[in-house]
Image 1 (tube, chains in turn cyan, green):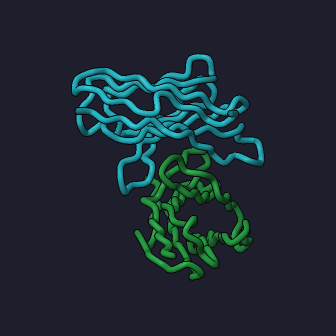
Image 2 (cartoon, chains in turn blue, orange):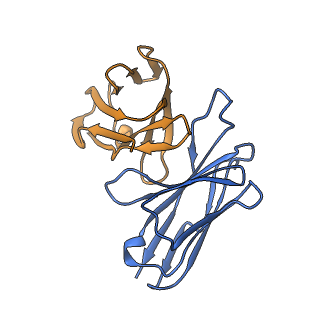
Length: 116
Length: 110
């Protein structure tokens, strides 16, 4: 499978615990995006990377959220001290070099987080 | 801040009907507009539109962009139950950030 891969697919955690999600983008894609989606809403932008550089982080994102892409390949999203409001689907997407004609983003299957 | 508004929020049709979904946007330094279909899992890419007035077509789906009036429509003709999904519109700015609308939920009844 050469699509965007996310792990785990589901995560249930107790409030206050830390969680980490992983995203492996399509291999030649150098842009990587993280989104959060709750029921009935469109994906909400969290952050994105060009290779290993984090270009922007949403102002709505608290400092409990951090993302890395250390070698410009896979990325991790960590949430510290989880709260019930963090329960959502976390989506990762990747896209080709922006100078390419085809820059549409392709999504992974998502990680569904439930904080109890 | 970039803004994407989709309408209607939901609709129910019968198989064979035609549906038209709307997306209006406000974005600084527009680059492209994208349509995605989302069933139970991840959004899947449908169309990317960059130029006004040029219709993109894929089977029973088609889409067009109006950059002057800042909107796009997605048409689905001869709907089938498999078209039931949430249809998401996103705009891409010059910094390549994607901003999504809330989506339109389409339900096609047999």
